[in-house]
Image (cartoon, rainbow over all chains, first blue to last red; front, side):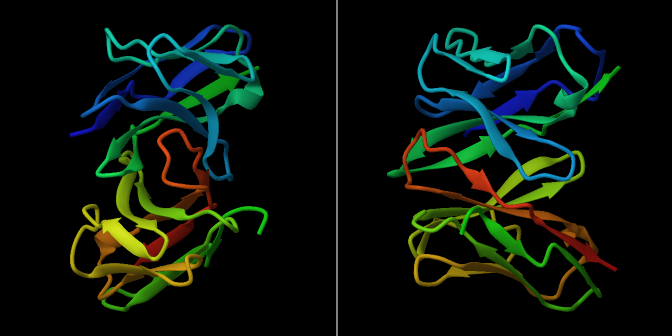
Length: 114
Length: 115
């Protein structure tokens, strides 16, 4: 089956620190990979995505590289801000019988202090 | 509409009662998904609709859960004889089509509390 494993949180950082949130996956087939973010009081929204091996998705200073050999899609940011405090979800999508569904990890809460 | 709309935003119900949760997807989006978000459990897939049909109901936790979609638009998730373990945030998402790389747009969710 399909599954996504993320590092457990919360991850607590000071402003301007470097961020890594690990994500690994198992999939039947060739997945597309996503990071979604849920800010406090808001719905989930797409942060970035990558659709094939070695692709790098990027948005708002966040990056993640699709690593097929290690089945990973780690999220990184060079300098976090207080406004980045949120829950981050890694997800994959695989075609199955002609349609695709998103499989999510459990989410990692990020807390950034000034 | 401008985004995915879910109602009610909060629902408190007594154990054993039935509840209906509504999702109004983005206009023109053919695919619709229901997920359940429980504390510490991430997002649990419940059911997927392509148009009005549901090719994948594998995530529904029990036969107390059912969902329908009419007119290729609004969907309702019904939970019969609610139990305390049904308490969670129920999220709806829609996508333009069933494509592999299509972005999913989420509603704000319905927080269900069974007392």
